[in-house]
Image (cartoon, rainbow, N blue to C red; front, side, top):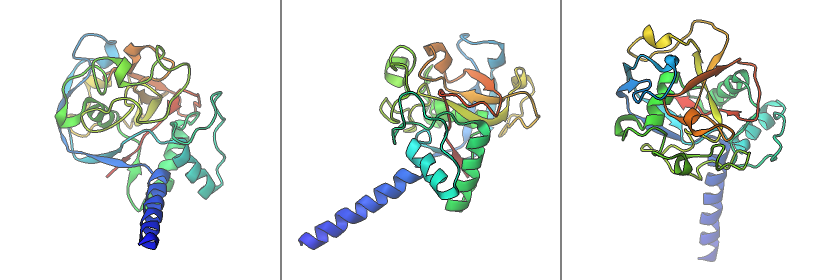
Amino acid sequence: MKTTITLIATLFLIIATAQAQTPEFIKVTGGTFTMGDEHGLGGDDEQPTHQVTLTDYYIGKTEVTVAQYRNYCNATGVNMPEEPNWGWNSNDPIVNVSWNDAINYCDWLSEKLDKNITLPTEAQWEFAARGGNQSKGYKYAAGRSMATAGWYEDNSGDKAHAVAQKKANELGLYDMSGNVWEWCLDWYKSDYYSTSPSKNPKNTARANGKVIRGGSWNYEASYCRVAYRSNRRPDNRFSPYGFRVVSF
C-alpha cells in the first residue's frame, strides 16, 4: 500500500512539473462581440466600437511564467532576459522580453507540442479578456475594480507578482488586466477600427509598433481596461512587458 501511494504521489509530481513547464490552455468558444470603448473612457484609437466575430481558439490561462520561459531557454541555449530588480521567481510572469522574443518562444513551443501556437491577435485578446461569450461587461478583466482584478501601480509594490493570485475572469483567465503588458500579434494602427474586418481581424500591415494590451504593475488603472490599446516597437524589452500565448 505504501509503495502504491508513493508511486501515485510521484506520478502527480511528474504531471505537475510537466504542466509547470508549459502553459495551460483554456478554450475560448467563438462568438460575436462589440470591440472597443463602449463607456467613453478611452482615446480615439478605441473607436469606433464595432462588431467582431471570432472562431474558436485556446488561450493561456496565465501569462507565460519565468519557469516556462526558462524551460525554453534551457532547451534551446537562448539566454534568459535581463533579470528585473525583484529577481527571478518561477511563478512570476516572464518580463524584459520583446515581441520578437515572444514569437521565438511560440515557434519553439509549436514544435515541442506539435500545435500551432502564437501570440493572440488584438481581437482574440480583447474577447478573452472580456470573458468571451460569458462576459458580464466589466471594465477590467475579472471585475469592476482593479483592486481585485489585478496588480497595478496602487497595489503592486512596484513589481510584478506570481500569476493567478488575483481574481479570474469569466473564462478562468488570470491577470489580463494588470501585472504585465501582453504582446499581441498585430501591428498597431491608431485608426484600425474604422477599417477592421468583421471576422477574425488581424492587422498585418507593417507599422512602427506592435499592439500591447492589459496594462501592468506600474500603470494606473485606466490603462488596464479591457478596451485600452497601445503599442511598442517589437524589439523593446522592459520589465513591464510579458506575454501569453494562443493555440489553434
